[in-house]
Length: 86
Image 1 (cartoon, rainbow, N blue to C red):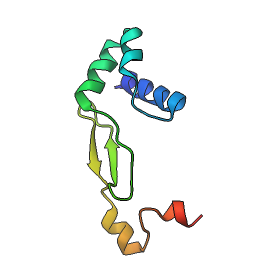
Image 2: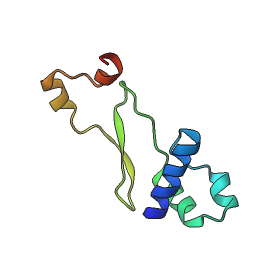
Image 3: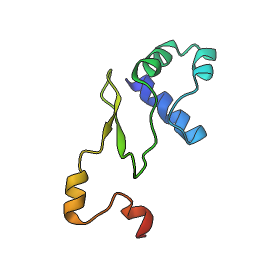
């Protein structure tokens, strides 16, 4: 798990995209990370229309819907609160 998280973070730091390049992983012989990324799929961006997050549960990392949408609605905080109110 730590190798996958490190490679994911490095991809984000370099490219502003948490999905490591398959070509880079293959060229550097990062076969374990490459296999895990292929198995778990890509990290999808968060949007207001499709509010999902990446559950980093290893080995079954996956995209899931936001879990606190009802609580945010109850408190009156829209999903784009920090983008529109700061």
